[in-house]
Image (cartoon, rainbow, N blue to C red; front, top):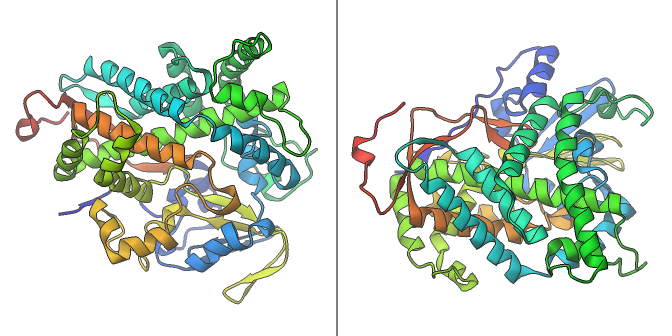
Length: 463
């Protein structure tokens, strides 16, 4: 029997605008009404602000794919992340974004075998760390997956493992950044000129400086290796030596820090979010967990890329996790020209919101949308929704360039970990909250035991 996946409470209907704004500043989910899981479109109209949330698949496709040029990325989220990511490909639009994309896309596709090896090495290291704590102790899985995902990206970028002390610094700094940096500022929301102060959080800037300082030092060291002709053939070298096919230009040092920041932080944070929720869902449904563990026995020693074709059910589990807990809960766009949605005028400058969180749980699209059911992907409904209403990595020209990387990473890590461990729930039910990514309000705690040890499920105790 499929299990209900934890879902945050929706805001009560009829509360005032001031309270709604307060809820939104703390957590996106708690500020949204339940009707968004059923509506094809919703709009908010206030003085100086007009927004549309679209759930109808035809409108989602229009915004992200068919008419993407007329719906550029909104400055609201970019402004929130600029202290951390600068003017990276995540935050830019138009010609600047296209130039960055032209340099990044070939570099990102250049080292698939090295990336797979990095994943396996980081997975083995994480499993060894977890074995030291797998005596039935309650483990905070968000830190485990954050260290794992950051180590994978670090090895892929720089060909070296991420030191444990650096992993902890990154985890704490990014968690605190999300808590201390508001999701939006009033000057940005109202499209005021750039000279109007944004009143960014000083604490958030300190946390951003911690992370960017680590990356700046690594890039400086790599540039010396490139100049001396001894740099390893990895993603950092590819990015730092890649040239714009039209102009022949490379990224400057400052631009390089921005681009590495988006790969390192967006790549590791989204993967960490997805994996931590996947482990919880597997702990919630022991039948599904055992099926993944059985399939994981097909992994080679060490794993080989061809093994992934054998992990069909594990892939369905990972897709189901991405459906229920899409790492990036909302994509924000601006209307660049006057248009209309469902007969309703959309003025220039309106914010257009595509919400994977609501689209993936939409009551008019998915059968039993709040249930964890990885078997749904082999049903007619699941196949249709995968085509029309499943966008965990966005879609269209701004689809995540690391989408393929993320899918391989998710399936491989689930298989490796389920081959080694058994996961059980505690009495602490995680509550999803949306900051920059979908995380648990108070962490995700699971009981972890070696899979080759005794099965303690029947006798488990809760803290």
